[in-house]
Image 1 (cartoon, rainbow, N blue to C red):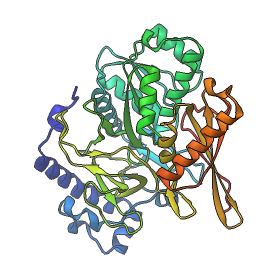
Image 2: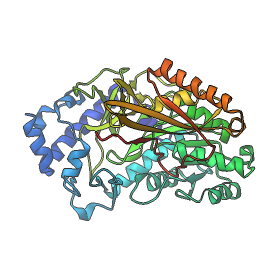
Image 3: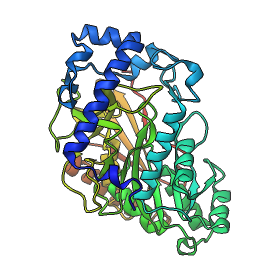
Image 4: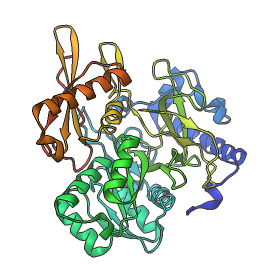
Length: 433
């Protein structure tokens, strides 16, 4: 199902003309209304009149999370606060939170984008949408909620936690669409198994999972254990919230970027130079319809690539590959660049372990070490010590052969790694860098 067919199937030349028109208007507006943007553009030697189309986008300076923190809380807003109907903020675990604002039109735009996303996953009026994203300052819960209502579906505002109650509601209310993080979906699958609930007895048909990187084998695992189609959704607070891009059911090969609202670029994270479609680098977004808090060339730190091949669903938007990691999550272990999702990919190919793991990074002398703690399945845990030792060595060899790293693999008892009701903490870095 396509929610806004006329816009989502625009010919590329018309789409780029629309992007150019909106970009020119955006640049003039932020230059006139936001002193910080005016200063940054002056420092970069660019004037609003220099931006005539999307082909000129590269002339504009980047915006980073640090820029948002410097202007905390409302310094980058382009409308007075009496026009802002809602604010959201990041958790602020690494400093000041980043604050974003929305006008009434922004909220309506966001709801429409989430309705598009849900429709791409096959949802529509009559569906019972079980929303387990967190409500509050985090954008996930409310963003998805308004989108479900805009779509004409019924929304169950569960938020996170109380997992057994979540499953009771799924059974009693007949939930058909599940929204949560992929790690929480695995948590729910595990509790279903412990409670003797057959996933086929539920009405769930699709899960729309985001807010953290997850691998293709993780998708397979969730689909097997929950008996649904698992789809990837992407968004981030600074750009809008969830609903920036979304996978469709046609082959599950990348997420359609809603390019009539967001211009996506891929850059070399080291040099900042734009990269052509198909090459992997850092994802950068410019918002071209937001009123309260537009953002220009925002460096997301997410690693992916853009794909231009047509999709069987008929949407003409470019697709982004699933995010493989973040530039600030990348580990460098003895000269090898490594993302947690790569280790997840290796672990998920091993039948005897569960999809619950944690990476402990330490420094011994001048050398970095990594320990992979992973739960073994119930059936293997009771095996002889030599069987477990053999499994540990096999995983270590796979890590070495496939990723080029020497890792210690520690097999731990089932259900001993902390479960997540939101984003999973995969890495504990004990180095003093």
